[in-house]
Length: 343
Ligand code: PEP
Ligand code: MN
View (cartoon, rainbow, N blue to C red):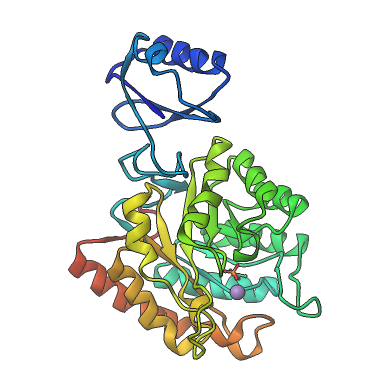
């Protein structure tokens, strides 16, 4: 159930409605809105006592939320959520590109890629310090040292950084070092990690699990929002199908579906979906055309020598070429391409 407050409801009316909900043994979630405040009620097993709520001062109406993902649903919040990473705003009418190597391998290498992707128009640097690898024998990332390199990248290039947390200890470190926390496909249903990401108050980039349904994906985001953190970006990164030419199948249809049913921004990761660099530009353009709010693209200065995911990483030159073509499509679509420092 959603309690919609009147336009101009006073702070006191809002806090006493919140207190009244709590007194009923329910959980109030104050939802920030540009015009008026709404309070989502979660935690109820049976019906919410309507009669006691609709008479409270400042309450305009009570709207039932039919979806299981209450806080993530557009029923609860009709306007788009804008996720702020530093001065970059993700969502709404903008298209935001995050790029970088799969893993941070060295300071020199990370800085070279960061400078190249910034020059091409990326506004957020993505590089893994903690890598969840399928094989325990594969490169697992530089850990804390990788985070120090990411700090240096931010300082020297002015790019904001997003990096993955794989467990509670790394989440704590990532929340301190990075501007945005990535929760990867393999952890999409790690509910305790999602709760911690929700408590961290950092923006969260949540990737879809490769066998997760649309509803399971939105329910994972609900875990983060339920902790009071509304700064979540959904990322479609491909799912497992019987198509075997590519690593995964980019579920383009998730983009318009997410835009319709949720207020959260949704971006696409064509690199992990394709698993091969020759297909990344086409899938990137398809995602933009389908309405994605941005992209996550893997770029490496020397992809054939990369310690992880080299086969799907673009060279800086190929990335710059891709960005040019995206700018032309964005222009034709009337989508604003977010460039550095536009905020
Ligand atoms: C990554 O972003 O490098 C990664 C490991 O992705 P995913 O979690 O989508 O597999
Ligand atoms: Mn990768």
